[in-house]
Length: 466
Image (cartoon, rainbow, N blue to C red; front, side):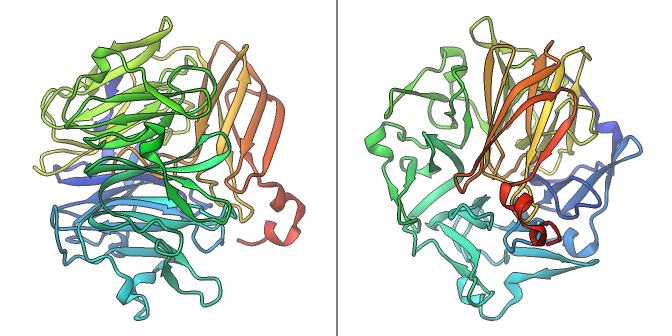
């Protein structure tokens, strides 16, 4: 499936890396790849002249900060994404490293955690993933932090004071957890659900309530089991056009949880996929544009595994150069950084410090068509948490705009669909986190379509909010 493109990454040195995030911090410069540095600088890669080039300034690079997880989201509704850097020099217990929440101001950065009023709220315990979360559905995001032996944190800007607050207690999300990460998606119809992958005890599943608080209901749904998952992703696992939940773990079997009826969840993972393995990162994406997603399991110390939907079931595939028999795998995402309409696989390597950023492209070009849908908020920022469904060639495909998942990492905020031989899409339906829905018809293939939130289209002031 993949060929190694690391020779086109500059620099690409052996370092211990944490997670990866495809972010949009400057609309004029396009997407960027933020790579967390565990024993070296953070790096901000952009595609320039056929190469990935590091453009991180000294503030963002922050060498020695021991960054583990990264994510981007527009928390102040200015149309640009802020960056959350989850810094952690220990695996568990109290930590000394301070997290950072960076806002771009011209050519400089503002760290919102430097506000003395925020100091009592800072996370002082080891943590894992961080994800973007639009809990009110209005395009104003917060950052959920997966604590490891402490309460879940939800950092948002208080509209009345303009300062950061931890909203988790107020919305009943401040559970004491040993969490690896989250998966956010409307898994039960149109209602937002928050799945917590837990390394300590069973997984958790929070359902949004009408008063904008959350209730933990995982046990009653049969969705959460013990031992908990390493990571989870919302994926259409049975090709019925609805989102299911992929769960991968290190202590128990990998699971493909599919909904039957309205509330019953069942594991349909084939034996070859379910077999436990030392997985760290996981990504689901249509790398070959055949209209069906592949699932890549990034392993630590064992060969990586790749599965694809073939002949009506999930089958093992040859990952090619991405096999990496004994690499210290950690995070992985999919993104089209070079803009050719084919997703690349990007991987990071931790602990030993022997890995380099992995950049893998499709080994053999094909003539498959594709379409990319990039929904925006009313402020013009990427609409993370939106659901995109397309209808083409008699099939329906569905994707989530990633908020951060797959362990420590965050995919690009674009819904990428392979179309095989189809040259157009009959219908595209976008569901924003606030419940707004829009349908577009007869869109041409082989291009990216940016879709503005209807509120932005109606309001000339919001169109100038950048």
